[in-house]
Amino acid sequence: MKVLLDNGHGENTPGKRSPKWSDGSQLFEWEYAREIARCVYNQLRAKGIDTELLVKENIDVPLAERARRANEIAARYGKTKTLLVSIHCNASGTGKGTGWEIHTSLGKTKADDLAQVFWDTANKMFGGTWKIRGDWSDGDGDWESNFYILKKTSCPAVLTENFFMDNETDCKFLLSTEGKAKIVQLHVDSILKYIEDYA
Image (cartoon, rainbow, N blue to C red; front, side):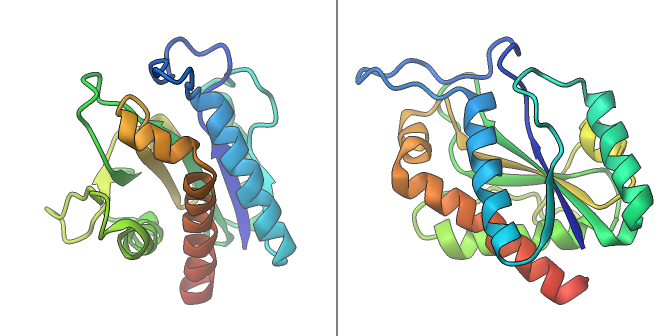
């Protein structure tokens, strides 16, 4: 199984950052997603999983180019032998949003299985403390979204929204050593579980 990690956005993307909190801390999504993706990459590689960072640049690589890269790799390894996880942090614009969620493309696809493994893992890890947001209208917990990276990739692809960077409680958790370790563990455990159950 080939695992592709897409660390969302780049240093030149407008916005995509938390407020600057009273202690001077601030989360930049491009930087945070790359740190998490790199840690997930290192842990998966250490476990013998063929893993690749889709975006090695710090700049914002256009979505069409990200999808092209993913599809080129999927064509080499096989669509059913490749999966993509795009890592993001959420924002509500009001500072009131909280919790974790996962997105897939529209309709029933193989990505739904991957998303459900992530949702169940997140619920086990965080469900007693945090809101695990889900849309169960079609029988599973993922949100079906028209995101470019999900609808234009040929392999199963999911997008994780790892808590809300404009909510101070969520953001402080994300920035903490414990929070980073948990977000990494969530991704590693979910990917390994999916490979074990579906590869």
